Length: 210
Image (tube, rainbow, N blue to C red; front, side):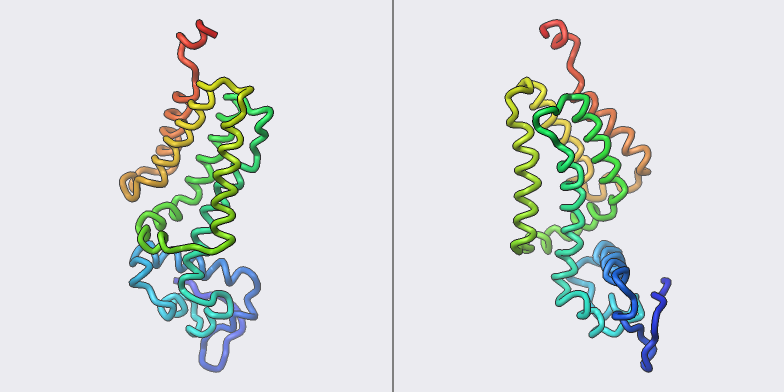
């Protein structure tokens, strides 16, 4: 595995302070890989540090504990949801706009697919995560979505369609664990979009009634 470049100490390890902000992300990337393949409980800070060429103590320059690393990885998932839902304008949302937003969300989720696999494989560890920032962002994601669905200017059936379409995507990517791990991103994305759009598209009977 490639080592980080930077100023080496006398003991051969790298000084994390000399690496800049990229070091923190590198720690998260290596932790994501190890937590996914070995499990959170079976991965030590020392092992993470060795993969990076750090001393164990150097990890504490960026994270106060292994749990702090776990929380930071979990917050990456929150960022995906917030990026998509912050584009919601509850006053102007139509099925076409929701469809575009859903496509963007699928693309984002597939590009971070490793995060969802990691989350499912470490569900027990994740269940114990709580802090004020995490809880606040979780509430923000839910409140943004619920506020948009509460807009009574949008027909009820359309709001239910949107809810079901997003549910299909989230279950298809988040709650399936390794079930589709061998399916290429492009193939899985195409199927998810096709199914989600099928849910969003009014039936011929609905259009006649409308």
